[in-house]
Length: 247
Ligand SMILES: NC(=O)c1ccc[n+]([C@@H]2O[C@H](COP(=O)([O-])OP(=O)(O)OC[C@H]3O[C@@H](n4cnc5c(N)ncnc54)[C@H](O)[C@@H]3O)[C@@H](O)[C@H]2O)c1
Image 1 (cartoon, rainbow, N blue to C red):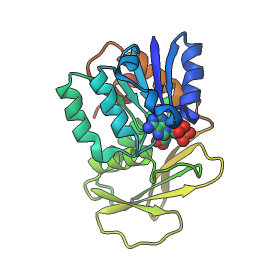
Image 2 (cartoon, rainbow, N blue to C red; image 1 turned 90 degrees about the horizontal axis):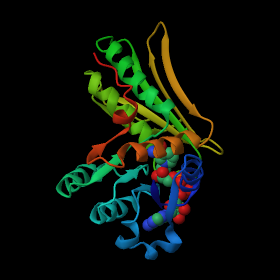
Image 3 (spheres, rainbow, N blue to C red; image 1 turned 60 degrees about the vertical axis):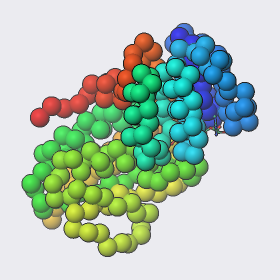
Image 4 (tube, rainbow, N blue to C red; image 1 turned 90 degrees about the vertical axis):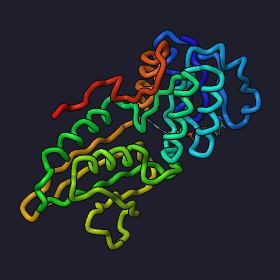
């Protein structure tokens, strides 16, 4: 498979390493300093583009790939506000878009557990839900895209709490009766940590995931590229891993 990398930072470099090990070819590496050398003709030589850049540049890059008719796998987070618009554009173009706030197998298991736990806790109103995430200090968005996915998943199941609020860990803020807190920290050397807990006066249930390095995200992005290469439409890691519980 011929891969174009849009974004050659920490993730782009790790994806290249894993893609090469899996027998793929990286034919294009675009980063901020050579963005002008990205042309539709060059991009069209690729079977798939993998986009890990920044919240400010991801929108333009996705549109560019869809216009070039190249399937695009998007790992960049912080673009949920554009998701509907981009989905419509992808369908209109008969294009291919694979996106996920987290490509790691472990976090996708956590997504499935999170849904199952919220499903179990529905109606047990003595339990207060809260979430916490921490990442390295260079991360641009807060809360993380993964935390946004986890919070939205819980909201779908918990009818008492149908909204959430982002809070810097340690900050105090009055929450509305239907909101739960999503706390975040930005600390040195944290690749990614997510935790969901339900606390009652008598006990606490907690599930969490801790990434030790970026390998899991990069492998997932390459697996997603292999999965999506010859498909049309919009896909996420739920389609790839199929861990989704059925109730
Ligand atoms: N979905 C996941 O599983 C997952 C996992 C890790 C990181 N991420 C997200 O991926 C994104 C990138 O993460 P990272 O750790 O590689 O960050 P990074 O800062 O190391 O790399 C981003 C790179 O994008 C480059 N860039 C900026 N503008 C560009 C443009 N217009 N075109 C091409 N490249 C451009 C920057 O120069 C930089 O090298 C972030 O949004 C992060 O939150 C997602």
